[in-house]
Image (cartoon, rainbow, N blue to C red; front, side, top):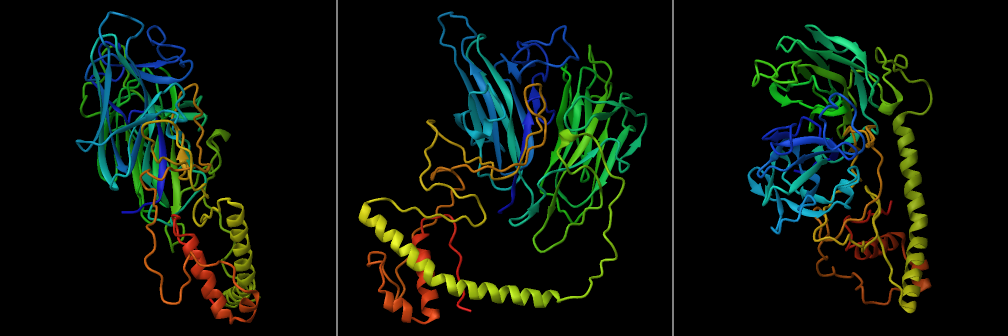
Length: 509
């Protein structure tokens, strides 16, 4: 099933990663939330870490899982084989990634663009080209000695924003915690926040299943719940689309702008209700030890709005559609621009007819000139020995025909041509929402390379590519327009045969 890809960035502090055996504790017992400037949180509980966040473990068999509905997963990490201790034993670390119990993970250098948001990582572990659907990813680290460890920084998951041709909003709709569309049940407080998405948050500490915050929305293909993690956060649940999922939000650092829940592949024409619950049914007695409050902190919901092909937007919720870092403003309702009745002038059909006719005339005028120009350029290049490259730019950013790959055993086909949500939290990472697009060369052997096979035998009357490309001027000048258009289409098809997409076909009018 082909989908419109959309990339979600998840920092290692996101509770959507379910860590084993311990989410946050001593490295000798499980995973420990660390920063490049603070390697331990002891005596620093509820403070903001310094540098790049990562989660570290020295436990053989430690791992984590992630459930997602999409087509690819990219994980960024570093393995440490000696920890500075030379005991004469060959210390090694082996990492493995399985998807639905199948070992499909590949490794590459973290210089790959998929790890550009995680400075300090050295290894990219990924699985891509998955059949679109629900998947369970499991990461396992095997340590040969107590002096080995793994640092995990976070990753990217590729979701669906709808079928191909879906129009995706350039910026997400930020529905902050003060938006009147939220429905709060139970005891909730409100306070300031220090993140970049909003400057406010709502919190609950009763740790009871009756304490909820709900939001109903439509017109969106992807939803992210954003919150703040701190030492008083424990378990919470999210009910969405008639499914309730529990999460462990234990985090002794104070971390803002964390993805607490996400879902993709939504139908923009349907309404959905997301409910945050300050309770984890798997831990009904509340948190033990120093984490004894059982709170949950909610900042906002991000809605990636989308319009399906041949439909109109149906969103009825309002919020902030600008960059999240601009603040937590929101509107109180949708505005209309009048009665919707049009004034006088030409009808839509008449205008469309004029435009189509003008384009047809322009195509007939430009076709002979374009053909002559292309043939002269190719003939000149053949005489000089230079290569002539052609590419299609229809529907994507043009790529050079022979990109130079990174010097790595394997390279992922991750590309920022799809929008990227970079909400990952952390002191050194920008928590702002990023949807800019940039070109990226994809090696020919990468998944989804889309290299077309060579065309079959030439049809009767079609010119061979080995023939002289220069046509006599008098033939072109005296040829009927229909023949000129036919020749142009044939040459374009041959020259574009090694490209991902076919060239457009011009009509003879």
